[in-house]
Length: 69
Figure 1: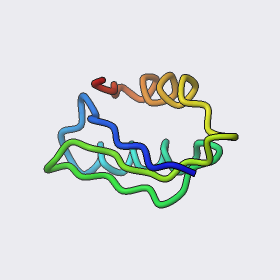
Figure 2 (figure 1 turned 180 degrees about the horizontal axis):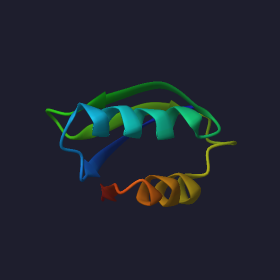
Figure 3 (figure 1 turned 90 degrees about the vertical axis):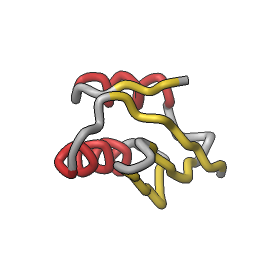
């Protein structure tokens, strides 16, 4: 298990926060999802053996959001 923190591009309102949180919560191997509109971040605990980061980034992109690296 590890904690991942991402800067989210395109998050502007509470609806955006809810969408990012939903996508993160539905990704396999994630738990303890927290999204901050003020900081523009997503923090979550992931099971490294299960979590597929490229698929997560792709799914988030389909919803109109990006990750700043």
